[in-house]
Amino acid sequence: MTTPPTAARPSVAWTLLLTSTATFMAALDNLVVTTALPVIRTDLGGSLTDLEWIVNGYVLPFACLLLLAAALGDRFGRRRVFTGGVVLFTAASAAAALSGSTGMLIASRAAQGAGAAVLMPLSLTLISASVPAERRGTAFGIWGAVNGLAVAGGPLVGGTITEHLSWHWIFWLNVPIGLALLPLVRSRLTESRGPNNRLDIIGTLLVSAGLFGIVLSIVRGHEHGWTNPAVLAGFTAGGLLLAAFIRWEQRSAAPMLPMRFFRSPTFTVVNFTGLVAFFGIFGSIFLLTQFLQLIQGYNPQQAGLRMLPWTAMPMLVAPLAGMLTDRIGGKYLVMGGMVFQAAGLAWFAVVNEPAVSYGTQVPGFVLCGIGMGMFFAPTGAMVMGSVPQEKEGIASGVNNAMREIGGALGVAVLASVFSARGGYGSPQEFTDGIVPALWVGVIALLVAAIGMGAVPGRRPGPAAPDGTPLPREQAPLPGGPADRSPAPVA
Image (tube, rainbow, N blue to C red):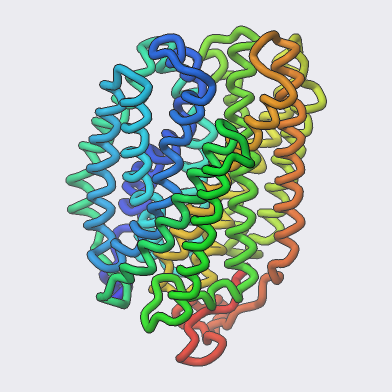
């Protein structure tokens, strides 16, 4: 049984509160260190490569373990595994706070990433189990607003804490939150499992190892060169392992990720869009936060405050986008979000110079924030609505894995473009590097917007006698009982 019956559904409010709080920590720690990187570099030492690993050390296990975490939740209980994720993330945060070297900090960040890999996909599954189908867009809108706030607010939180306390408190902040969550997760969330009691061990190992090879080569590409034999070997081995995973899943009687899901334009294109969107977002934030501090002279808190227009917009826009997704579908909302973000980065690229005023940069922050808010809520609802309900955990894992791969690729590629065209030698040299890097982000986001055009428009669903759309569980599914993959909803 994958979902409790309606009468036994856990409280929607409690589910949203607990899952959003947990994933807020996970999303926040993706970028919370960005405004603290110059201070960490001074305190612990390290090169640009070390700073990238402080960011990517989190991303690597996050991206590689998402599908494993979703599969473990389906097999052993989503609430139980989610609780384990909270424990791991909290303990790793304490270890990061106690770090006295870049090596220890990177290792602790990797453990945080493993915990976050559990929290992100299972949060969506737990929400889906507690919210009626016709209201899930709104619920995902709230979840998206919180996560958008965390992603964009990471620089502000990190900067403020670093300025008034120390960078160690960026990680101590998670510890009391995690400890407070544990008893509430156990008492307020209802347990659920996937339809199969078997764990696809071979498929899980193949996809995790394949993602590890590819993501590791992505994050090492800038450090060692994209044509370095070790980097190329990682891409090759990862690609072969993923090909073996696809072949195994096609032949498995109980596949972890049924390959037929990719026949859905919604599932395929939304996942591609997530990869490309995070490519542009993460790579750009990595450089823009350093520009505000190193070139314009703001301290960490001042830099974070000046990104507040970017931070605040998702909180306002994402809930509205979620409600609109319930009514009209998410296709054009996501396309618009990509265009807004591309316009914001283009604005930064056009006006960027060492002496540019903050007021001149504000429109770029606002445009990026609006675009981020329009992206999070619809994509969550679209992915979860494009697969059978019992496979929502794996679908969420795929979606989050693609986003994290995109984020790692964005930091690596945009940092490579920055280094090839500029550097840290002078304000003008930094500007010479960041402008072409931002244009790469613009192009990626526009490609994502165009790609969303392949998603079919919203199809009218079946209606009850009073005209109310029926929940997805009551809607007829194409292909009959043997094919439980519903038509795209957006």
